[in-house]
Image 1 (cartoon, rainbow, N blue to C red):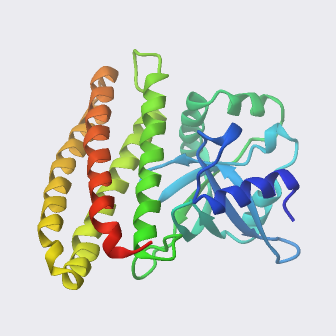
Image 2: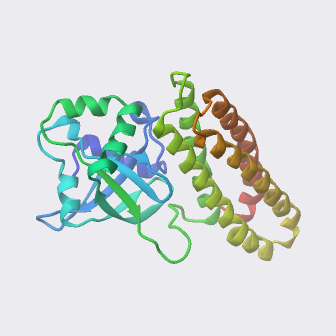
Length: 279
């Protein structure tokens, strides 16, 4: 069973669809459920994560620098299929321990983002593992943690808002002369996620709404046009953070441009479509 501290985080995380308060308010956390290596019992643990592009995230088995690996790590060595709760989505994933150069590159990104990881490594003689969690493809739409289409839209929108706010904060807190490797990955992962979301709306959600509510077609057409405009801004941000000699000021400017347009778009979409979808 999780300890009382972890259980409090789990309860708040689930109740608020990934939103946390206090010390973890601005942290990237997920809930990881593994199968006990000895007991076969399912165990859920909150863990920090790093975006890694596409459908893969990284978690680090630091255990605060303990000499022993955390239980969840030993569990996934025995059974690498795990369940991940991101706040917005719940999905099955395959865990893979990174090794060699791949592990070193991922570790360097983590330490660059938070020197606390290096402090944990200094406390222990074991090599702290870095684990990649890759979503297992499934048929049909993703499993949104919501009971209606309207609630699902709001949950996903709020997740984009939170992640973009974190990226803006990370850019403001940078040293001004360079853009960190992990921050680049965060931006590119966000861009890909937003592209996937808008593609899903254009091909599935909007046709569904149009069939049920023909009078909403002008609104849907405006939203499609906004998707195209936002796609241009996303492409500009991708170029800004992918350049060999990235200008941090240019990247910050692109993030601010995207933030303004995206927030206006999300607000308009919620105002117009939530009454049709229900909450």
